[in-house]
Image 1: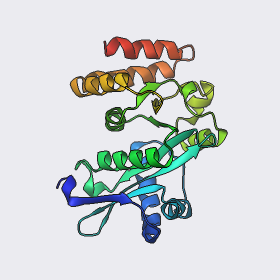
Image 2: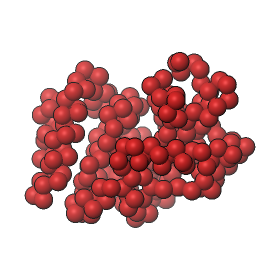
Image 3: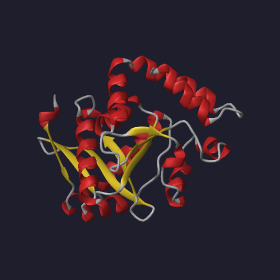
Image 4: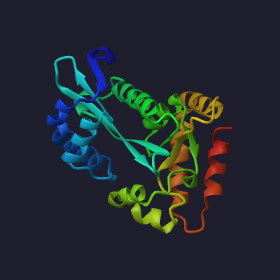
Length: 230
């Protein structure tokens, strides 16, 4: 099975029949990872389909295979590509990358001046984001819209986020800024992830230990990141 076995497209209103299945799979995936997600109802997901603000994937036999949607924050200044999910039977075929690329391009088309950001603990998502031009940033560079941060309340690490006064947590923040033309840092970061994936995993383990220490600061974590990938 490879990426040529799938159709990735902007979701249409008639795809709303898959909304409940998508929401169920999002919840099951988060449960399996031991993390929380900003819970969305089938009605919310269906709304994104009707608005043309989501991407859906199907296997060539017509079976639903994956999904992702767009959310806007701070009056359209920031965009998040949220709810990325791939059906378990179609994982490891490159579909997540294809969906992320499609939703990224849709975001750039609909909101060309917006900064696109994400929070993730996953190496695979980090690699995909880096390929698209995202760069690791501090939490202060993300949207400060209260509604966005409320979405973290369903995460098992929410108490850590509160303890750190929303300045840091287990997730790594990544940002694509259209004002930065070259995105050289993202290119270098993507290359390093390809060459040294083991170092990134080491960074994540050490970062998580540092985050749990009351006196550890964001500067020490960023310094660790710099030293590991130097």
